Length: 62
Image 1 (tube, one colour):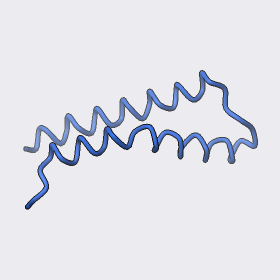
Image 2: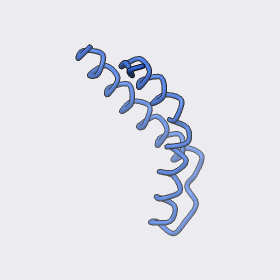
Image 3: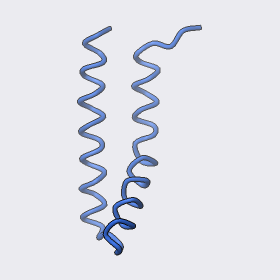
């Protein structure tokens, strides 16, 4: 069985929340403080936008 772009893109979306949590944790460590809810939402939106962009590029390769 070979992986197709759809398999990869679905996995990317399913991991978005966990990845956002890792990025948030790294930023909190780097800044030495907890991030606000608004900052956390901003991080998630940025990651979601980046994933959407990457998926569109990958789908163009199919």
